[in-house]
Amino acid sequence: MRHNGVETVLYTDIEANPTHAQVNSGGETARAAGCDVVIGLGGGSAIDAAKAIAVVASEEADIWKIYEGQPITRLPFRWSLFLQLPAPAPKPLFSPSLATGS
Image (tube, rainbow, N blue to C red; front, side, top):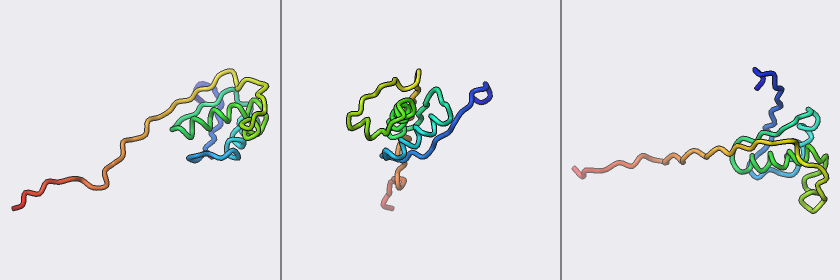
């Protein structure tokens, strides 16, 4: 993206089961940087957080207040992109082998 003249901000402070504080911080980061879009990459937590961050960034409100019913007065960004990446297949803890008994 930078190669094409698009400025980016990387926000990585999201963990599994993100807290409202992490979402609010991401929204504040996006708003302060003047972001036009949120791109969420990862699994469920990352995607859910990215959607909430887009709301917080455009609404300038605490995500918890919105969750509790505060009306959303602005649409989140013109567009947002969320890509869910499949989790890799789990690796076996051991390799099964056949015993010949000899």
